Amino acid sequence: MHFEKDSPNEALDPQLDRLLSRKPVVASNDFLARLHDRLAAEDAKGAAAWKQPVDSVDVRIDQLLASKPATARPDFLARLRQRLGREESQETTATPRLIRFPTPRWAVAAVAVFALGLATWTQIERNSGQETPSLASHSAADAVLSVDNAHTYDPEITQILALAQNLDPNQELRSLDADRLQSFLLSSY
Amino acid sequence: MDETNPYKDDPDVNCMLRLQAGDLKAFDEIVLRWQNPLINYFHRSIQPREQAEDLAQMVFIRVYKAASGYEPRAKFSTYLFQIARHHLINHYRHQSRRPLDIQDPADIQAVSPEDSTIALNDLEAIFEKTLEHLPENQRTAILLLKQQELSYQEIAEIMDASEGAVKTWIFRARQFLKQALKDFV
Image (cartoon, rainbow over all chains, first blue to last red; front, top):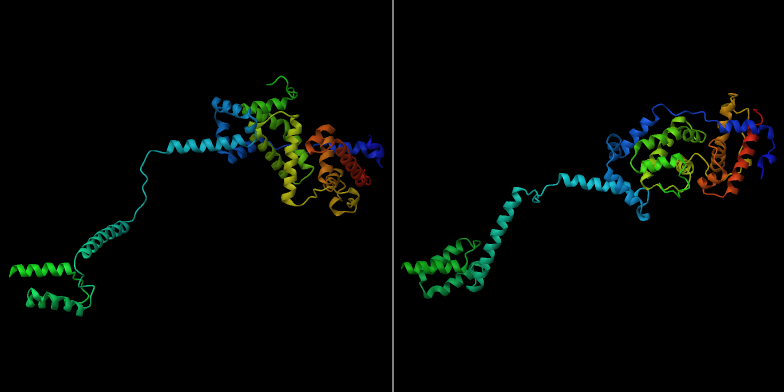
């Protein structure tokens, strides 16, 4: 099939061919150097490769991987190399150590207070479950009423305890403490 | 290298295999041999020249990065211009300044001598301006044939088309260029 025969201006063919075949542009003198720089900028590993002798182990790995169709994708080795390089650098910098989390001092103090409080509360609750109901859980009138029950021991001491408790109704005086105090006072008589 | 490799006599294929084995000098040999053809191929499609050089460098970077997985399945020129055309089309897409689809040259307004931009009476300048009006597939096909002296079969491989389609594109390109240049020659 001779397309040129169909041309309306066959006289132009030689001129056109001359224009088409021309290569008027010549590469800059530093084209290759700039290309090297660009490769180096794009790939740090590539940058090192331009300046260092090629590692024969690397070449062998490349050949082995490239021989398998599954790993023959153009970017496979590049990504693998990048990943291996990254892991290698992590291994060289990593040393066995305990993992420590930065903890503010106030948090340590808060935890200690909380633990102490929890222990105290647990102990109190346990005791309150075994002992008589606390005075603090009742109103002042209840306190007086409960102290009234203690008249069998000593009306005067019971009166003192009731007055002391009623001076500050918000103060928590557990029944255990009241009993202990009363026992102590009674024993001192 | 494999003795059954049909491209074993292609020096550039040998360079690629050497590069694959770690010989970086082989890459330089490829660049020095192909930098001018590649830059001129781009220069006929895009301006300014610096942009043509930039695209040529991107092609070589692609070649370098792909070397590890390279398999000689075609002549190196076919492989190289496949990558080059891919970059050119991507460039057009990013620039959105060139028609990528097939466009009938008859529909394109031919460049006239009165056009102020081409009143330089410089045939080379007129020719460049006219080439720009060609659809990408026609321009690439005729440049690969005439400028790079590739065969129809190679061009068809590069452009992922049939040889018949390539011949049609080249014929239409010639028709258009002749029509546009007849008043200047």
